[in-house]
Length: 202
Image (cartoon, rainbow, N blue to C red; front, side, top):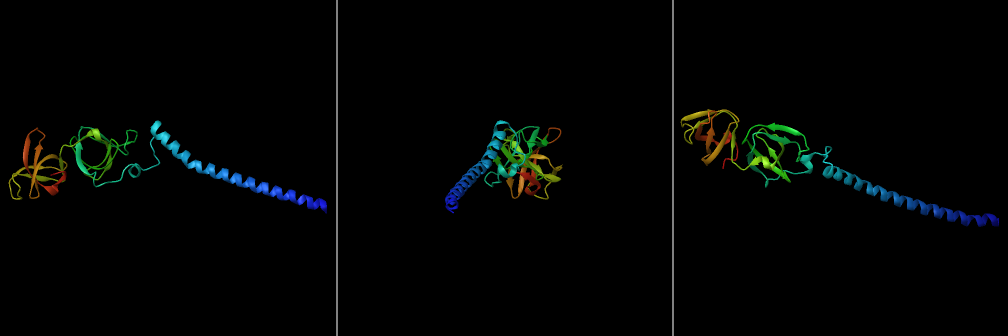
């Protein structure tokens, strides 16, 4: 009987030790699990900044920029060949190659040296700012007549097809005075209605 009674404290101490060990293991497990997300973030950042690997599993339009009304402005393409990327960096795939110098684009947001631009057909991609110019240009949205004056019944100087680049000079009563360069390098100045153009007319 005395042996049995003397053995009970030993069992009690073992239970306390086992409980203490479990608590320590659980605490260690929580700490390790807490570091795993940080390690993932570290490897992603290391891969992106030092190895140049794109974050292909993330949508660049969501993580790099949100459309801002304060950033919106019309610019035009400075070069005769411009690569439009799906993200703000050369390591992102080229979505379009545009060979239309002075084509107007609408800047909707920016990230570093890159600008997210919208084309006349609604396509949105990224272009490096060095390939953009502040020169004002517009694009005809449909077939239009170049009028001699800012009146609907004025004489027709020429007929312009869709997607013709014109340079706005001034606006008056919903009309825009524009400069057009023909295929023969001749220059014409006439009037087009504002709603027939896409770009900065003012």
